[in-house]
Structure formats: C-alpha cells, structure tokens
Length: 223
Length: 161
Image (cartoon, rainbow over all chains, first blue to last red; front, side):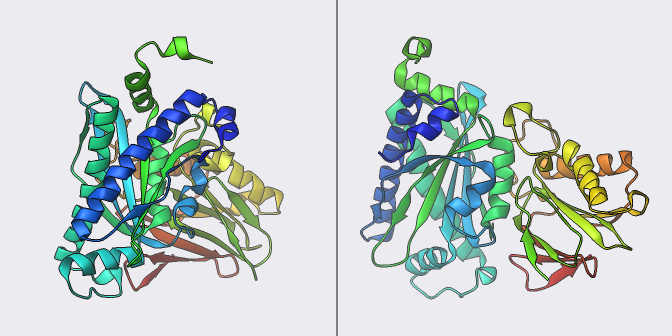
C-alpha cells in the first residue's frame, strides 16, 4: 500500500476517500509522465504516487528537504465549471538542478547556473513545461471522474519552497490542519529531472471528486 | 551562541544570547518581541490572522493568540512588560491568483494587519518592519545585537532591521 490508512482514519477520512485519491493520482500523474516524455523526447518514469496526510507545517520539508531550498514551481488553479466555489489546485515543483536541465534540453544550450539569472525565454520554458504537465493531469482527472475542472492561467514562482507553500497551506488546509499531499516523482534516468506534483483539493473540491466516482449517494457508502 | 529554528506555529523565547531563525517564509508573519535591556526576546511564526478552532493548532499559529502568548512567554522568562518592543517581517503574496476566500486582501496582508492590531491592543510598539512584496524571506534574529537579518532567494544582498 502506498498510503498509511491508519493516519487517514485518525483524521476522519474513510478508506473509500483515500482509495479514490490514490486512483486519481495514479491516472493523473501517469498521463503527465507520458506528456513529459513526448515533450523531451526521452524516456520518463514515475514513481507510484504517494497519498499522504502531512501536517501543514511540514509540507515544504516533505517536498524538498530544506524549507529554504530554491525551487521553481508552477501553480494552476482550477474551479468546477458548475460551482466555482469548489476548487482543486495543482502545484508542480522542480528542484534547482531539474529546472536548469529542463531549460537546457528544450533550448539546446547551457543555462546559467544560478536561477537568479534566468532570462525571459528560460522562465517561459519552465512555466510552459509545468503548465503542460499539469494540464495533462487535470484532463486525465476530468476524463476519469467525469468532472469539469477548468484551469486558470498558470503562475510561475521561483523562490524558496517554504515560502511558496506557506500561502497555499494557509488558504487550502482541510480537516484539522492536515494537508493532503499526492506526491509523485516524475523522473528521467538520463538527466536529473525530478518533478513533484501536489494536488490540493479544498473540502468541497474533495466532495466533488468523490461524488463523481461513487455517485451522489455518498452517505450510503459511509462507514 | 546557538541557533534555534522557529517553524510554522512555533513560539521560541531566549534568555541568553542566541539566534532565532525562520527559513523560507512567505505569507507568514515573523514577529519578534524583545526587552532591550535584559535582551530577553522571543519569536513567533504566524500563519493565519484568526484562530480556526477545528484546526487544533498551537497558539503561535494564529495572530489573535500568538501575540498574547509571545508576550506572556517573554515576561515569564524575565522580560519587563513595560519595556517590550517589536519588529515584524513577512506577509508576502507569492501568487497573484491564490484563491482568497475572504474578499480582496491576500492572507499575507491580513496577517500583517492582524498582528499590528494585536500589538496595538497590547501596547507593544512596532519599531521596524519588512513586509509585503512577492518574495520569500529567510529571517535570523540575533538576541545579543537585537538585529534581524533578512535573506532573499533571488537577491544577492541582505536586509537588516
């Protein structure tokens, strides 16, 4: 099992809810890995997505290690077409080395060592790569669950991972200050290309996912 | 001299000359309250403006409980209540389009406003601040010099309060 059910149970999640999230992440991230492989013309593998409950405060360290590690990240917010209150946010994070490698591969040149020195084109490359991967994830989820999550424009942020996640956790924490993290490494053997995708539902967003999979009568499945 | 980390929701107070540090701060507010004479000081790492009961978080996490609790702990360690002053850093807005459920202001701004409000209510003067903007900050407070060093990810220069 790639999740710790006892931890989920302690915080009020049913096994059904957790399995649904596991399925969604498997599919979403699988599509993403395929997209990256096509984009970069090389083999891309993914680890089995890990669905975890993480204390808000530990999110940054969970993702990258040190909360002051510099990363590039792309945020895509989506809202349910039928009810804009329901949101599902996606964040993809690349560490410093992976960021530079993505730029190098797509621009066929050597990018500066320092992420501070990236020019407009390099920034664009990172933003678009992140966006493409997230859009594939979103489409896969829509297809699988029959839902209609509509994406907003992507935002690129290059900064310390702790700083990036603080705002997200303060506006998206659900169920007792625990954060739902669907973490998956999408990586390539040839280069250091590691991306981590965070799928962040708010409470009502979660309900939509579950309703789509199990039907409106969620109560009858209750445990 | 040691360096103590102050993570989200933490309140850390020091009586002896030490450093208090918060790395990778975004929309949170880092609040330092200190007694200039005895050099007793404390730092809080505040995530939200108001307590959310169902959250079960520590008092340091919310502005409405953190300020009072930080004052209390500094006083317990020997700080003189009438001499206390404060400095604050953070409250950045990292993403333009973050879903903000409470109207127009982003959470970084709301945190800053809330902390200032509670400082005022408790009669603690704010002597310096480095807030807002759209960049992450790493913050180190040295209680022996009462100086805050602020480091940015994408700049080569540091800032001092």
